[in-house]
Length: 413
Image 1 (cartoon, helix red, strand yellow):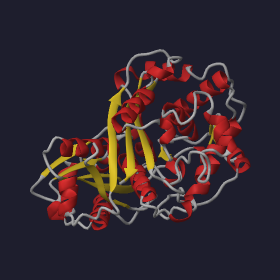
Image 2: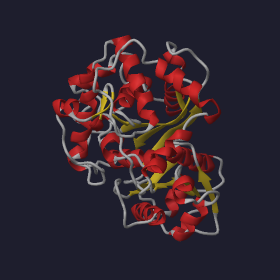
Image 3: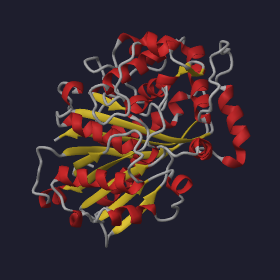
């Protein structure tokens, strides 16, 4: 992977975009990535378009990618539509990298876009219902919720308003971690408070209001121990990355000073294992392969962007990436180790909780942040001396964990 580069990135603000179509958002992100790389649309040789809700929410199944790319001025090349739940964007990025590595092209584009905010709220929330095996839905739910057994939610700690079924699952993961390691609700709230503080300095974030730990704990409940600021919102938005080989970078006038090296790109699915066998977990295995491919050790990592659809996700993924030992993430978060300026900053963008979570664009939004950080262009949220970064993005559920996980490792040239 040492001869692959991210030459340009682009991203819209994540949030609610009532006045823009899905294709408007995709076009803006693509244009920004091309401009960032100093490239023309005609130089793109292959494109991978990620989206998980285009069909159920806009009615556009089958060919959303070719439509979006044609409207962005990219035509006459191979275009692929990619869907892998919340890991769709990272999957598109991985496929673009694979095409470059295989020699199929020298310049490839990955883009993800979603328009999730619609008037029909039940249909909007319903897109999450297919994030697991529908033929075994009740069994899936029972297995996952059983992980949280042993900790009884306090009275009044569940919202009366509708929310995604995945929040119940994340709450079960929380309670399992609390029972096993002594993790507290306050430690989980520390993650959310930290991410909301980070997002204040991100002009592309959906939410830019700082919260204290006490404010997070006092916020409206979703389902114990999760409160509203601990959970990602429904988001619209798009993000894109232009990848290239060394030869492709030369053709783009060799803007080496701003290109970022892709050291590893890994996508895995899970395997059957017991909940106590955490070293068989999908995130742990994916990270192990990525670190080996990149030739780096977890202790070398300067910062990370991880999948925090809830604050608990950050704790679990910090452990899976071996940034802290199993069971230590809650205490590390409370000590401030994951804050910009701390030992290992995580989600300086604000994470999914604050930056937003437009499913197909999420992974590429994480990559946008890491490229910005490694260039030293992140402003007040800049991680000082950042040279090596890791990204983790998961999607869907099979068994007791994510259906698919992507891990990418990046470095300054």
